[in-house]
Amino acid sequence: MNTDQGDGRSAAMVVTPLSGRCAEVVERAEHACFGISPFNSYFSTARIRELAAWGLERFERVDFFVPDAPSAYTFEALGYAPEKAAWKARRQGQYTRNKIVTALDSLGQADAGQRVLGWAELESNAAFGQLHASGLRRYAQDADFRAACREATVWVLAGKLPAGQAPDEEQVEHAVRYFLAELPLFIDTPSIVGAGTSVFCYHQPPAVLRRLYGGELSWRPAAGQGFAVVAPPIRDSKR
Image 1 (cartoon, rainbow, N blue to C red):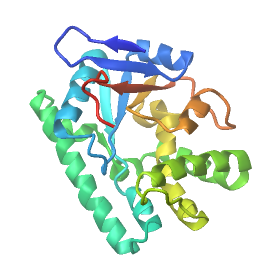
Image 2: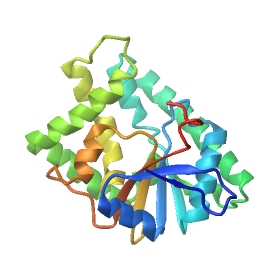
Image 3: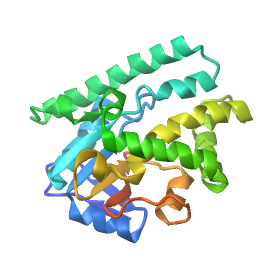
Image 4: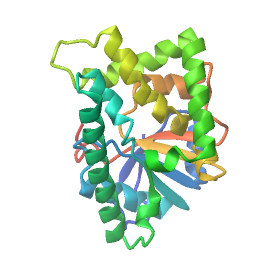
């Protein structure tokens, strides 16, 4: 792992690319997309500011992906009525957007609101729509790919269910739509944002992403797509 401190203005970050190609994309430093989970307490305004400061210092462009509306799929799988699930996702999504804008404003970014990629922005994006549709088709037709997506979904649900309780088949099939909505950003963010290369940054990826970037699945990331685990040094980091 490599600790990148920039020129000292931003907090140190431990940067771990998932593959050699991902490392090359990180070095290009053209575009970074930070995944910000709406229901994860790890992403305080202070933490988002740290990540943003580091990203803005190193990359030419920076955006923040917030899977707001798709979070409703997870809540529906946990037993919430669709209307209640959508309301919770919408409320928390707006709260997360506000934290990102506050963090960016504090760093002097006048276009803070334009740097958030939520469902409202993505569902009207042609490249995203094509990638999302492709992922849904592949999920329906490719058994190995489907199993990998379900594995990632089990990982997400395991952190939300009571200790020792495993999600059932119906819950997994319902909640997998959340992962499928995120997947385009792991496959081809460059086409979505109009960049030559892009690295997706998150602090703890599920095992399936290591397989994805290792070329073990039938769908492979675009040549300009990278992924890196980015987090403060362990002494400062929270799970």
